[in-house]
Amino acid sequence: MTAPGAAGPRRIVVMRHGETADNAARVWQGHRDTELSDRGRAQAREAAPLVASYAPDVIVSSDLRRAADTAQAVADLVRLEVRRDPRLREVDVGRWQGLQADEVRERYPDVVAALDRGEDVPKGVTGETRAQVAERAGAALRDVADALGPGRTALVVAHGVSGRAAATELVGLDHDVADQVLRSLDNCHWIVLVEAPKSFSTTAGWRIAAWNVGPRQP
Image 1 (cartoon, rainbow, N blue to C red):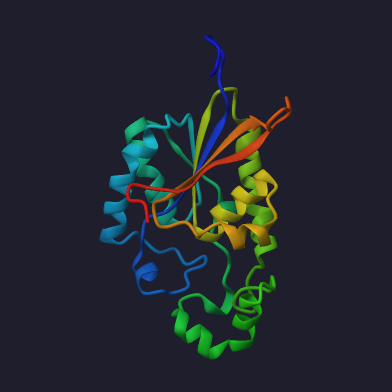
Image 2: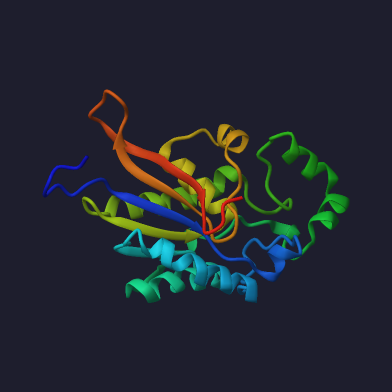
């Protein structure tokens, strides 16, 4: 329990945006600047009060509209400005952008097979690797963490790949292990990261307190 007057731990909530029409159709979006669908906007409205209850002091979002609009739904409740950071964008999927998942498997079987084997090859031949996404999105999240005052909370709104990669990068979790044991984030679900010491240690570090939290648990 936090002592009276103590600031308490710092906290970061990493949220995925609401659903888009491309999400529903299983289309690779990457940096494509898609909007929230009607369902995605409803998801954002439903999730916003729950995320606002964490009382964020700062809100940072990917500059893509689907993330920024999701962030704005929370910002409207807590009366904060949304700062946009392009480093939080979704993975660049190269030649796959705008293609449906089944079409990708048919046209790029060798790349898909390599990814299925766990190899970190560039998405869509000319896109990014997971390591590259983790480096840029992780740096963005680290900057948020470094600027966060004692006892403060930040909300970071990103994407399925970039949000997951940034969170696992911040806590120092091996990305291969994360892929094996942690499920992907659902639309308008989030991760809670808390700065806390390990058991029997006074050294604080960022830990995963909750994963894939949302209005409706899967």
